[in-house]
Length: 511
Image: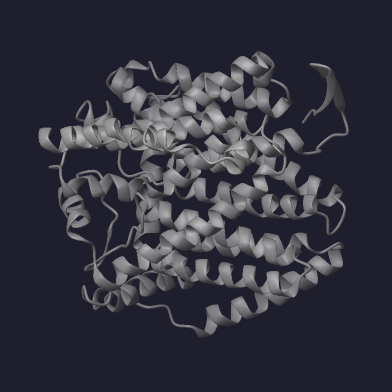
Protein backbone atom coordinates (compact mmCIF):
# COMPACT_ATOMS: atom_id res chain seq x y z
CA UNK A 1 0.00 0.00 0.00
CA UNK A 2 1.43 3.37 -1.01
CA UNK A 3 1.61 6.39 1.25
CA UNK A 4 -1.02 8.16 -0.85
CA UNK A 5 -3.51 5.31 -0.63
CA UNK A 6 -2.84 5.02 3.09
CA UNK A 7 -3.89 8.63 3.57
CA UNK A 8 -6.95 8.32 1.36
CA UNK A 9 -8.17 5.02 2.90
CA UNK A 10 -6.97 4.38 6.50
CA UNK A 11 -6.12 0.79 7.46
CA UNK A 12 -8.96 -1.48 8.56
CA UNK A 13 -9.43 -2.35 12.22
CA UNK A 14 -8.04 -5.84 11.59
CA UNK A 15 -4.82 -4.31 10.23
CA UNK A 16 -4.44 -1.97 13.17
CA UNK A 17 -4.55 -4.86 15.59
CA UNK A 18 -1.35 -6.21 14.07
CA UNK A 19 0.69 -3.07 14.80
CA UNK A 20 1.27 -3.71 18.56
CA UNK A 21 2.49 -7.21 17.70
CA UNK A 22 5.42 -5.66 15.82
CA UNK A 23 6.80 -4.28 19.09
CA UNK A 24 6.40 -7.58 20.93
CA UNK A 25 9.87 -8.98 20.04
CA UNK A 26 11.50 -5.71 21.08
CA UNK A 27 9.64 -5.69 24.41
CA UNK A 28 10.55 -9.31 25.06
CA UNK A 29 14.18 -8.56 24.19
CA UNK A 30 14.33 -5.67 26.65
CA UNK A 31 12.76 -7.77 29.39
CA UNK A 32 15.24 -10.56 28.73
CA UNK A 33 18.18 -8.14 28.78
CA UNK A 34 17.06 -6.63 32.09
CA UNK A 35 16.63 -10.05 33.67
CA UNK A 36 20.00 -11.40 32.50
CA UNK A 37 22.10 -8.39 33.52
CA UNK A 38 23.55 -5.11 32.29
CA UNK A 39 25.90 -6.66 29.74
CA UNK A 40 23.02 -8.03 27.69
CA UNK A 41 21.22 -4.69 27.91
CA UNK A 42 24.35 -2.92 26.69
CA UNK A 43 24.59 -5.12 23.62
CA UNK A 44 20.90 -4.62 22.93
CA UNK A 45 21.22 -0.83 23.12
CA UNK A 46 24.41 -0.72 21.05
CA UNK A 47 22.87 -3.08 18.52
CA UNK A 48 19.96 -0.68 18.26
CA UNK A 49 22.24 2.28 17.54
CA UNK A 50 24.13 0.29 14.94
CA UNK A 51 20.93 -0.90 13.30
CA UNK A 52 19.64 2.67 13.01
CA UNK A 53 22.85 3.80 11.29
CA UNK A 54 22.81 0.82 8.93
CA UNK A 55 19.18 1.54 8.09
CA UNK A 56 20.05 5.18 7.31
CA UNK A 57 22.90 3.92 5.14
CA UNK A 58 20.43 1.74 3.23
CA UNK A 59 18.35 4.84 2.53
CA UNK A 60 21.33 6.73 1.09
CA UNK A 61 25.00 7.31 1.72
CA UNK A 62 24.27 10.87 2.80
CA UNK A 63 21.71 9.69 5.37
CA UNK A 64 24.20 7.19 6.76
CA UNK A 65 26.90 9.85 7.08
CA UNK A 66 24.52 12.21 8.87
CA UNK A 67 23.54 9.43 11.28
CA UNK A 68 27.19 8.81 12.13
CA UNK A 69 27.85 12.55 12.46
CA UNK A 70 25.04 12.77 15.01
CA UNK A 71 26.20 9.70 16.93
CA UNK A 72 29.89 10.60 17.24
CA UNK A 73 29.51 13.76 19.39
CA UNK A 74 27.29 11.71 21.73
CA UNK A 75 29.60 8.69 21.90
CA UNK A 76 31.41 9.83 25.04
CA UNK A 77 28.17 10.48 26.95
CA UNK A 78 26.62 7.18 25.84
CA UNK A 79 29.79 5.36 26.85
CA UNK A 80 29.72 6.86 30.34
CA UNK A 81 25.96 6.36 30.67
CA UNK A 82 26.51 2.60 30.47
CA UNK A 83 27.86 2.74 34.00
CA UNK A 84 24.39 3.39 35.29
CA UNK A 85 23.95 -0.39 35.12
CA UNK A 86 27.47 -1.76 34.48
CA UNK A 87 30.74 -1.94 36.37
CA UNK A 88 33.80 -0.35 34.77
CA UNK A 89 35.80 -2.30 32.20
CA UNK A 90 38.59 -1.23 29.85
CA UNK A 91 37.04 -2.86 26.80
CA UNK A 92 34.01 -1.06 25.42
CA UNK A 93 32.13 -2.30 22.32
CA UNK A 94 30.62 1.14 21.69
CA UNK A 95 33.85 2.05 19.91
CA UNK A 96 33.33 -0.51 17.14
CA UNK A 97 29.87 0.67 16.00
CA UNK A 98 30.84 3.51 13.67
CA UNK A 99 33.99 1.75 12.38
CA UNK A 100 31.82 -1.22 11.33
CA UNK A 101 29.25 1.05 9.67
CA UNK A 102 32.05 3.02 8.00
CA UNK A 103 33.61 -0.15 6.59
CA UNK A 104 30.21 -1.29 5.35
CA UNK A 105 29.63 2.08 3.64
CA UNK A 106 33.09 1.96 2.08
CA UNK A 107 32.48 -1.55 0.74
CA UNK A 108 29.21 -0.40 -0.86
CA UNK A 109 30.81 2.71 -2.38
CA UNK A 110 33.78 0.73 -3.67
CA UNK A 111 31.49 -1.89 -5.20
CA UNK A 112 29.49 0.76 -7.03
CA UNK A 113 32.34 2.95 -8.25
CA UNK A 114 35.10 0.35 -8.60
CA UNK A 115 38.79 0.92 -8.02
CA UNK A 116 38.81 4.19 -9.94
CA UNK A 117 37.49 5.77 -6.76
CA UNK A 118 40.94 5.29 -5.26
CA UNK A 119 42.81 7.35 -7.85
CA UNK A 120 40.30 9.51 -9.70
CA UNK A 121 42.33 12.62 -8.84
CA UNK A 122 45.96 13.22 -8.00
CA UNK A 123 45.10 14.04 -4.42
CA UNK A 124 43.01 10.86 -4.19
CA UNK A 125 46.01 8.83 -5.37
CA UNK A 126 48.16 10.37 -2.62
CA UNK A 127 45.51 9.64 0.01
CA UNK A 128 45.29 6.04 -1.21
CA UNK A 129 49.06 5.73 -0.87
CA UNK A 130 48.76 7.05 2.68
CA UNK A 131 45.98 4.55 3.42
CA UNK A 132 48.11 1.67 2.11
CA UNK A 133 50.96 2.71 4.41
CA UNK A 134 48.56 2.89 7.35
CA UNK A 135 47.27 -0.59 6.52
CA UNK A 136 50.75 -2.13 6.28
CA UNK A 137 51.77 -0.55 9.59
CA UNK A 138 48.95 -2.47 11.30
CA UNK A 139 51.21 -5.53 11.07
CA UNK A 140 54.42 -3.87 12.33
CA UNK A 141 55.70 -6.22 15.09
CA UNK A 142 57.46 -3.42 16.98
CA UNK A 143 54.19 -2.08 18.38
CA UNK A 144 53.46 -5.18 20.46
CA UNK A 145 50.96 -7.26 18.50
CA UNK A 146 48.18 -7.23 15.92
CA UNK A 147 45.59 -6.05 18.45
CA UNK A 148 47.62 -2.88 18.96
CA UNK A 149 47.74 -2.25 15.22
CA UNK A 150 43.99 -2.77 14.86
CA UNK A 151 43.41 -0.37 17.74
CA UNK A 152 45.47 2.25 15.93
CA UNK A 153 43.54 1.62 12.72
CA UNK A 154 40.27 2.53 14.44
CA UNK A 155 41.68 5.95 15.32
CA UNK A 156 43.67 6.64 12.14
CA UNK A 157 42.67 4.52 9.15
CA UNK A 158 38.88 4.32 9.57
CA UNK A 159 38.35 8.13 9.60
CA UNK A 160 40.45 8.40 6.41
CA UNK A 161 37.80 6.41 4.52
CA UNK A 162 35.51 9.45 4.73
CA UNK A 163 37.76 11.02 2.10
CA UNK A 164 36.33 8.60 -0.45
CA UNK A 165 32.75 9.21 0.64
CA UNK A 166 33.20 12.86 -0.26
CA UNK A 167 33.98 11.89 -3.85
CA UNK A 168 30.54 10.38 -4.45
CA UNK A 169 28.21 12.50 -2.30
CA UNK A 170 26.24 15.40 -3.71
CA UNK A 171 28.20 18.69 -3.73
CA UNK A 172 25.59 20.41 -1.55
CA UNK A 173 25.91 17.76 1.16
CA UNK A 174 28.81 19.67 2.70
CA UNK A 175 26.42 22.55 3.39
CA UNK A 176 24.22 20.16 5.36
CA UNK A 177 27.24 18.81 7.25
CA UNK A 178 28.26 22.35 8.19
CA UNK A 179 24.83 23.09 9.63
CA UNK A 180 24.76 19.82 11.56
CA UNK A 181 28.08 20.67 13.22
CA UNK A 182 26.88 24.11 14.30
CA UNK A 183 23.59 22.79 15.71
CA UNK A 184 25.22 19.85 17.50
CA UNK A 185 27.96 22.11 18.82
CA UNK A 186 25.34 24.31 20.48
CA UNK A 187 23.28 21.42 21.85
CA UNK A 188 26.19 19.44 23.26
CA UNK A 189 27.72 22.55 24.79
CA UNK A 190 24.60 23.02 26.91
CA UNK A 191 25.48 19.79 28.67
CA UNK A 192 29.01 21.07 29.10
CA UNK A 193 27.59 24.12 30.89
CA UNK A 194 25.61 21.79 33.13
CA UNK A 195 28.83 19.95 34.06
CA UNK A 196 30.53 23.27 34.82
CA UNK A 197 27.64 24.48 36.96
CA UNK A 198 26.71 21.34 38.87
CA UNK A 199 29.60 18.94 38.40
CA UNK A 200 29.60 15.50 36.83
CA UNK A 201 26.68 13.13 37.42
CA UNK A 202 27.55 10.04 39.45
CA UNK A 203 27.91 7.73 36.45
CA UNK A 204 30.34 10.12 34.72
CA UNK A 205 32.35 10.68 37.89
CA UNK A 206 32.54 6.90 38.24
CA UNK A 207 34.14 6.66 34.78
CA UNK A 208 36.58 9.49 35.56
CA UNK A 209 37.63 7.85 38.82
CA UNK A 210 38.29 4.50 37.16
CA UNK A 211 39.73 5.28 33.75
CA UNK A 212 43.51 4.92 33.42
CA UNK A 213 43.98 6.49 30.01
CA UNK A 214 42.68 10.04 30.34
CA UNK A 215 45.17 12.25 32.11
CA UNK A 216 44.29 15.77 30.96
CA UNK A 217 40.97 16.26 32.69
CA UNK A 218 42.22 18.36 35.61
CA UNK A 219 43.12 22.05 35.60
CA UNK A 220 44.52 22.67 39.03
CA UNK A 221 41.84 21.57 41.50
CA UNK A 222 39.10 21.62 38.87
CA UNK A 223 38.05 18.87 36.47
CA UNK A 224 37.48 19.98 32.89
CA UNK A 225 34.00 19.62 31.46
CA UNK A 226 33.64 17.11 28.65
CA UNK A 227 30.11 17.93 27.44
CA UNK A 228 28.88 14.83 25.58
CA UNK A 229 32.29 14.13 24.04
CA UNK A 230 34.99 11.63 24.96
CA UNK A 231 37.49 14.32 25.98
CA UNK A 232 37.78 18.05 26.55
CA UNK A 233 40.07 18.25 23.51
CA UNK A 234 37.37 16.78 21.29
CA UNK A 235 34.77 19.22 22.63
CA UNK A 236 37.15 22.13 22.05
CA UNK A 237 38.02 21.13 18.48
CA UNK A 238 34.37 20.52 17.61
CA UNK A 239 33.06 23.90 18.80
CA UNK A 240 36.11 25.59 17.26
CA UNK A 241 35.13 24.28 13.82
CA UNK A 242 31.46 25.03 14.51
CA UNK A 243 32.26 28.65 15.39
CA UNK A 244 34.28 29.10 12.17
CA UNK A 245 31.42 27.66 10.14
CA UNK A 246 28.90 29.99 11.80
CA UNK A 247 31.08 33.05 11.21
CA UNK A 248 31.60 31.91 7.61
CA UNK A 249 27.83 31.73 7.05
CA UNK A 250 27.48 35.17 8.61
CA UNK A 251 30.15 36.64 6.36
CA UNK A 252 28.35 35.46 3.22
CA UNK A 253 24.76 36.08 4.39
CA UNK A 254 22.78 38.69 2.47
CA UNK A 255 19.83 38.79 4.87
CA UNK A 256 20.44 40.81 8.05
CA UNK A 257 18.35 38.51 10.19
CA UNK A 258 20.29 35.44 9.05
CA UNK A 259 23.58 37.22 9.48
CA UNK A 260 22.68 38.19 13.02
CA UNK A 261 21.60 34.64 13.80
CA UNK A 262 24.84 33.13 12.51
CA UNK A 263 26.91 35.73 14.38
CA UNK A 264 25.03 34.82 17.56
CA UNK A 265 25.74 31.12 16.98
CA UNK A 266 29.43 31.82 16.36
CA UNK A 267 29.66 34.00 19.44
CA UNK A 268 28.03 31.39 21.68
CA UNK A 269 30.31 28.64 20.37
CA UNK A 270 33.34 30.90 20.89
CA UNK A 271 32.26 31.45 24.48
CA UNK A 272 31.88 27.69 24.93
CA UNK A 273 35.42 27.28 23.61
CA UNK A 274 36.70 29.42 26.47
CA UNK A 275 35.11 27.02 28.94
CA UNK A 276 36.78 23.97 27.39
CA UNK A 277 40.20 25.12 28.62
CA UNK A 278 41.76 24.23 25.24
CA UNK A 279 44.35 26.87 24.39
CA UNK A 280 45.29 25.30 21.04
CA UNK A 281 41.66 25.36 19.95
CA UNK A 282 41.44 29.03 20.94
CA UNK A 283 44.49 29.87 18.83
CA UNK A 284 42.95 27.84 16.01
CA UNK A 285 39.74 29.84 16.19
CA UNK A 286 41.64 33.13 16.14
CA UNK A 287 43.77 31.94 13.22
CA UNK A 288 40.77 30.62 11.29
CA UNK A 289 38.80 33.82 11.89
CA UNK A 290 41.77 35.83 10.61
CA UNK A 291 41.89 33.71 7.43
CA UNK A 292 38.13 34.04 7.02
CA UNK A 293 38.31 37.82 7.17
CA UNK A 294 41.30 38.04 4.84
CA UNK A 295 39.72 35.81 2.20
CA UNK A 296 36.88 38.31 1.94
CA UNK A 297 39.28 40.95 0.61
CA UNK A 298 39.33 41.07 -3.18
CA UNK A 299 42.65 42.96 -3.40
CA UNK A 300 45.97 42.77 -1.56
CA UNK A 301 45.54 46.36 -0.37
CA UNK A 302 42.19 45.52 1.20
CA UNK A 303 43.72 42.41 2.80
CA UNK A 304 46.51 44.44 4.39
CA UNK A 305 43.99 46.95 5.71
CA UNK A 306 41.87 44.21 7.25
CA UNK A 307 44.93 42.58 8.76
CA UNK A 308 45.94 45.84 10.41
CA UNK A 309 42.44 46.45 11.76
CA UNK A 310 42.42 42.97 13.31
CA UNK A 311 45.96 42.87 14.68
CA UNK A 312 46.03 46.38 16.17
CA UNK A 313 43.44 45.74 18.92
CA UNK A 314 44.81 42.22 19.47
CA UNK A 315 48.30 43.60 20.09
CA UNK A 316 46.89 46.30 22.34
CA UNK A 317 45.08 43.69 24.43
CA UNK A 318 48.23 41.57 24.57
CA UNK A 319 50.26 44.52 25.88
CA UNK A 320 47.74 45.90 28.36
CA UNK A 321 46.03 42.75 29.62
CA UNK A 322 47.71 40.85 32.42
CA UNK A 323 47.81 37.10 32.05
CA UNK A 324 46.66 35.15 35.13
CA UNK A 325 49.46 33.44 37.02
CA UNK A 326 49.58 29.76 37.85
CA UNK A 327 48.72 30.62 41.47
CA UNK A 328 45.64 32.53 40.30
CA UNK A 329 44.45 29.43 38.45
CA UNK A 330 45.12 27.12 41.40
CA UNK A 331 43.26 29.39 43.81
CA UNK A 332 39.92 28.43 42.29
CA UNK A 333 38.23 25.57 44.10
CA UNK A 334 35.88 22.91 42.80
CA UNK A 335 32.93 25.29 43.14
CA UNK A 336 34.58 27.77 40.71
CA UNK A 337 35.06 25.54 37.68
CA UNK A 338 34.18 28.18 35.09
CA UNK A 339 36.58 30.78 36.59
CA UNK A 340 39.42 28.25 36.75
CA UNK A 341 38.99 27.22 33.11
CA UNK A 342 38.69 30.83 31.95
CA UNK A 343 41.92 31.65 33.80
CA UNK A 344 43.58 28.62 32.23
CA UNK A 345 42.53 29.65 28.72
CA UNK A 346 43.44 33.32 29.23
CA UNK A 347 46.84 32.44 30.66
CA UNK A 348 47.74 30.23 27.71
CA UNK A 349 46.38 32.70 25.14
CA UNK A 350 47.92 35.90 26.52
CA UNK A 351 51.28 34.40 27.51
CA UNK A 352 51.81 31.18 25.53
CA UNK A 353 55.61 31.16 25.68
CA UNK A 354 55.62 30.78 29.48
CA UNK A 355 53.17 27.89 29.56
CA UNK A 356 54.53 24.82 31.34
CA UNK A 357 52.62 22.53 28.97
CA UNK A 358 54.28 24.12 25.92
CA UNK A 359 57.74 23.80 27.43
CA UNK A 360 57.00 20.18 28.34
CA UNK A 361 55.90 19.46 24.78
CA UNK A 362 59.08 20.96 23.35
CA UNK A 363 61.16 18.89 25.78
CA UNK A 364 59.34 15.68 24.82
CA UNK A 365 59.60 16.42 21.09
CA UNK A 366 63.34 17.08 21.43
CA UNK A 367 63.80 13.76 23.20
CA UNK A 368 61.84 11.93 20.50
CA UNK A 369 63.77 13.63 17.71
CA UNK A 370 67.16 12.71 19.19
CA UNK A 371 66.65 9.42 21.03
CA UNK A 372 63.75 7.57 19.38
CA UNK A 373 62.99 8.60 15.78
CA UNK A 374 66.55 8.13 14.38
CA UNK A 375 66.52 4.49 15.55
CA UNK A 376 63.08 3.71 14.12
CA UNK A 377 63.02 5.54 10.75
CA UNK A 378 60.20 3.37 9.35
CA UNK A 379 57.99 3.66 12.42
CA UNK A 380 56.94 1.57 15.37
CA UNK A 381 53.52 0.57 14.03
CA UNK A 382 50.14 2.21 13.55
CA UNK A 383 49.02 1.72 17.15
CA UNK A 384 52.33 2.39 18.91
CA UNK A 385 51.20 5.76 20.27
CA UNK A 386 47.56 4.84 20.86
CA UNK A 387 45.83 3.63 23.99
CA UNK A 388 46.01 0.12 22.58
CA UNK A 389 49.81 0.02 23.04
CA UNK A 390 49.32 0.18 26.80
CA UNK A 391 46.00 -1.59 27.01
CA UNK A 392 46.86 -4.70 24.98
CA UNK A 393 50.60 -5.06 25.47
CA UNK A 394 51.37 -3.14 28.66
CA UNK A 395 53.51 -0.62 26.74
CA UNK A 396 55.00 -0.06 23.34
CA UNK A 397 58.50 -1.30 22.62
CA UNK A 398 59.81 2.14 23.49
CA UNK A 399 58.41 3.96 26.51
CA UNK A 400 57.11 7.15 24.94
CA UNK A 401 56.32 10.41 26.72
CA UNK A 402 53.10 12.32 25.99
CA UNK A 403 53.30 13.55 22.39
CA UNK A 404 50.28 15.85 21.85
CA UNK A 405 50.97 16.20 18.13
CA UNK A 406 49.44 14.07 15.41
CA UNK A 407 52.23 14.86 12.94
CA UNK A 408 54.96 13.82 15.37
CA UNK A 409 52.93 10.79 16.40
CA UNK A 410 52.74 9.83 12.72
CA UNK A 411 56.52 10.10 12.44
CA UNK A 412 56.79 7.63 15.31
CA UNK A 413 54.20 5.19 14.02
CA UNK A 414 54.77 5.28 10.25
CA UNK A 415 58.03 7.14 9.64
CA UNK A 416 59.09 10.58 8.46
CA UNK A 417 58.12 10.10 4.76
CA UNK A 418 54.55 9.24 5.77
CA UNK A 419 54.23 12.34 7.95
CA UNK A 420 55.56 14.49 5.10
CA UNK A 421 53.04 12.87 2.76
CA UNK A 422 50.16 13.79 5.06
CA UNK A 423 51.41 17.36 5.45
CA UNK A 424 51.67 17.67 1.66
CA UNK A 425 48.08 16.39 1.25
CA UNK A 426 46.77 18.95 3.73
CA UNK A 427 48.78 21.79 2.20
CA UNK A 428 47.57 20.84 -1.28
CA UNK A 429 43.96 20.77 -0.09
CA UNK A 430 44.45 24.16 1.58
CA UNK A 431 45.83 25.78 -1.56
CA UNK A 432 43.06 24.20 -3.65
CA UNK A 433 40.36 25.58 -1.38
CA UNK A 434 41.88 29.05 -1.61
CA UNK A 435 42.09 28.95 -5.42
CA UNK A 436 38.58 27.57 -5.72
CA UNK A 437 37.20 30.38 -3.59
CA UNK A 438 38.98 32.97 -5.71
CA UNK A 439 37.59 31.33 -8.85
CA UNK A 440 33.99 31.15 -7.57
CA UNK A 441 31.50 33.86 -8.42
CA UNK A 442 31.40 36.39 -5.56
CA UNK A 443 28.30 36.04 -3.41
CA UNK A 444 27.34 32.64 -4.85
CA UNK A 445 26.56 29.56 -2.70
CA UNK A 446 29.75 27.99 -4.04
CA UNK A 447 31.80 30.94 -2.83
CA UNK A 448 30.27 30.57 0.63
CA UNK A 449 31.30 26.91 0.86
CA UNK A 450 34.79 27.52 -0.45
CA UNK A 451 35.39 30.44 1.89
CA UNK A 452 34.50 28.32 4.92
CA UNK A 453 36.61 25.43 3.64
CA UNK A 454 39.56 27.77 3.05
CA UNK A 455 39.34 29.01 6.65
CA UNK A 456 39.06 25.52 8.20
CA UNK A 457 41.94 23.83 6.37
CA UNK A 458 44.77 25.91 7.94
CA UNK A 459 43.18 25.29 11.34
CA UNK A 460 43.27 21.53 10.78
CA UNK A 461 47.00 21.78 10.05
CA UNK A 462 47.61 23.84 13.20
CA UNK A 463 45.52 21.54 15.37
CA UNK A 464 47.32 18.45 14.10
CA UNK A 465 50.66 20.04 14.90
CA UNK A 466 49.65 20.91 18.47
CA UNK A 467 47.07 18.23 19.09
CA UNK A 468 45.58 14.96 17.88
CA UNK A 469 42.70 16.26 15.79
CA UNK A 470 42.85 13.48 13.20
CA UNK A 471 42.29 10.85 15.90
CA UNK A 472 39.23 12.48 17.51
CA UNK A 473 36.03 10.52 16.97
CA UNK A 474 33.76 13.35 15.79
CA UNK A 475 36.35 15.62 14.16
CA UNK A 476 38.67 13.32 12.18
CA UNK A 477 35.96 11.93 9.83
CA UNK A 478 34.75 15.45 9.07
CA UNK A 479 38.32 16.62 8.41
CA UNK A 480 38.93 13.83 5.90
CA UNK A 481 35.52 14.39 4.29
CA UNK A 482 36.39 18.06 3.82
CA UNK A 483 39.70 17.14 2.18
CA UNK A 484 37.89 14.67 -0.09
CA UNK A 485 35.27 17.26 -1.04
CA UNK A 486 38.01 19.74 -1.92
CA UNK A 487 39.77 17.08 -3.99
CA UNK A 488 36.60 16.27 -5.92
CA UNK A 489 35.13 19.69 -6.58
CA UNK A 490 38.14 21.99 -6.33
CA UNK A 491 39.86 23.69 -9.26
CA UNK A 492 43.62 23.73 -8.77
CA UNK A 493 44.26 23.19 -12.48
CA UNK A 494 41.90 23.69 -15.35
CA UNK A 495 42.29 20.10 -16.49
CA UNK A 496 39.20 17.94 -16.81
CA UNK A 497 38.51 14.53 -18.13
CA UNK A 498 35.17 13.04 -19.06
CA UNK A 499 34.18 9.60 -17.87
CA UNK A 500 31.21 7.66 -19.18
CA UNK A 501 28.93 6.68 -16.31
CA UNK A 502 25.85 4.76 -17.40
CA UNK A 503 23.95 6.69 -20.01
CA UNK A 504 25.37 10.06 -19.09
CA UNK A 505 28.71 11.76 -18.74
CA UNK A 506 30.48 13.14 -15.73
CA UNK A 507 33.36 15.59 -15.60
CA UNK A 508 36.08 14.74 -13.14
CA UNK A 509 38.33 17.56 -11.98
CA UNK A 510 41.91 16.42 -11.73
CA UNK A 511 43.93 18.04 -8.96
